[in-house]
Length: 265
Ligand SMILES: Nc1ncnc2c1ncn2[C@@H]1O[C@H](COP(=O)(O)OP(=O)(O)OP(=O)(O)O)[C@@H](O)[C@H]1O
Ligand SMILES: [Mg+2]
Image 1 (cartoon, helix red, strand yellow):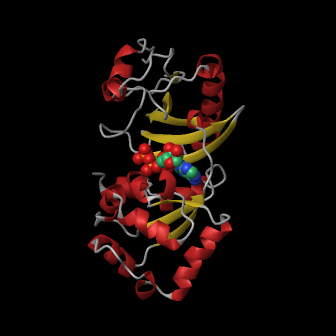
Image 2 (cartoon, protein in one colour; image 1 turned 30 degrees about the vertical axis):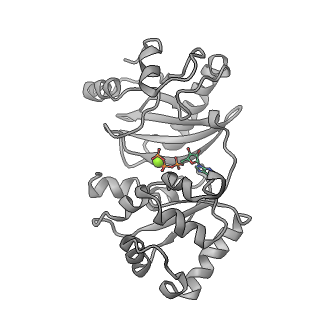
């Protein structure tokens, strides 16, 4: 579990104002205590009208409408991705306040978020629903203010264009990092997630901690931990790690094992 400082630093309610020009538009709505208590109590059916006042409900409804009636929802830190079974067509689209409550209430990830007791405020972060091509999602690994690694988030999946586009992907994400993230985020070691639409349209999705719990996709914690331990300030170009050939369906660890040894320093 993240310590209080980490919870604050990685909460979208902390970083969004600083990065809103390069991040996916988000409207952040605080969760009133009564609603938080109901969600935490996990009593299933709840009549939201009895928990929140009309102004609050209208605010949430109008926010969803402002995204053409189709939104994506997160807590301060996470999306309820484990609530997909509760969603029509597995999509997690929020079209009304009930969708939102169902996803939150049926997500262990969100319930765990809400169980923290050392946080000032909890929020509903609403974003426009966008169709994201899986190959356009990347996680960037920053160690000591140096962008060290870039990994596709759709892993392990083979995308033939990564080989040819690799240098462009590295360039676009390095430029984005240097212009918009470097020294603006409150930590020196962390991850950030982006969508890259060619040739160089980059949208920031999220920040996250870098530790042994982090999903590093194409990288292993062991190799990343070794770089952290070195504690070097020397700038090196980032490694873009991806599947270089179609090896059929593999588990994550099989893929990690098979990829060619990278030049991470
Ligand atoms: N606005 C959006 N519209 C549609 N799909 C989205 C949107 N934002 C994110 N997604 C999809 O949902 C996935 C999870 O979103 P996100 O990375 O923000 O969640 P997270 O809980 O922070 O994940 P992690 O714990 O891995 O950091 C993304 O990989 C993306 O495919
Ligand atoms: Mg995240």
